[in-house]
Length: 231
Image 1 (cartoon, rainbow, N blue to C red):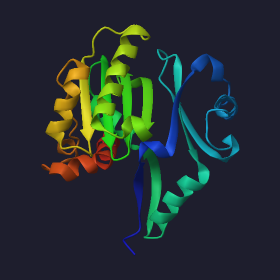
Image 2 (cartoon, rainbow, N blue to C red):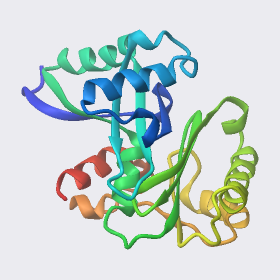
Image 3 (tube, helix red, strand yellow):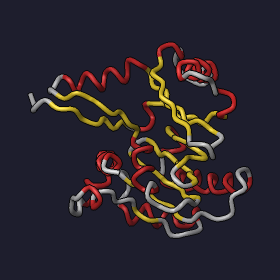
């Protein structure tokens, strides 16, 4: 077995369901009461019994009117945790890749509207944020994430939604993590639908590592978790 130690467990986005719920609808004096209200709201949105979910949630402070919720099927999470324990590692923080990357990409930037595209094999997550707080979260699998052209179309649709439904005007920045396509190809493909030149997310320098190349994009979530823990 490896040396025993506590680790941060970074999971692929599709293993959990992310949702933004109105803060006024799940507010309560005690956190346990808020969790019960959240579970009630999620009961029809999950592909499994909400009683079998591990739920985590966080508010965005006094200026945010929403609560960010993550729900994962308990046996799935326990499977990941048990795999770690089997080699002598003990999971501490459990984070989704997209949220870890969001914090690494925008956590130290001035407040503005920005888009993160977390593109991996089999899925793509689009995180539209104001500052580091999400306004919109979409994780696409299946046909919507099956081809580069489909992903580009969904990115364009997200920009339209931002303008027409969220009252946005222009993004200050768009950042891409691409573990599927080569970085240059992914950035070129998304430049059109974004109507701006996106940047490649590279958290490794902040984690005091050199150029990791293609592997750096694959493992970017792990680096982002390290960066976040140092802030």
